[in-house]
Length: 154
Image (cartoon, rainbow, N blue to C red):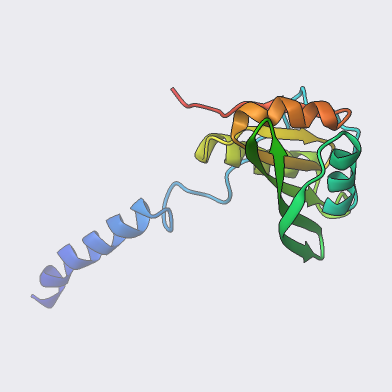
């Protein structure tokens, strides 16, 4: 009799675990979203300092407001005054010793799809530009980069 009473509980637990992907059909991580083919492999930078210096050389000096250094990369946020607007640039540089091109591409795809970010990218780095309308101006200042519009799922 005890087994019959616990069956609905066990069935409910199994359905819950299956729905969460802990049991059943979800076998391992999702495949990476590759780097978009239009993103050039060149223009690699070692740190965010290098990208910020290149942006300044292109005519957009920026005021850094946040910085993080990691073992396998770095990121920073800086503000650019452009056409009477504050443009926020969030830089991410990933180490080529740790991350391959598709891993960088997967990070870019997540921002474009999940958060509808407009991205400037090349090599092993990318920048989320807000407002996105200024991404083309930022890309023009960074030779070898391209603008990637947000991905909207249909």
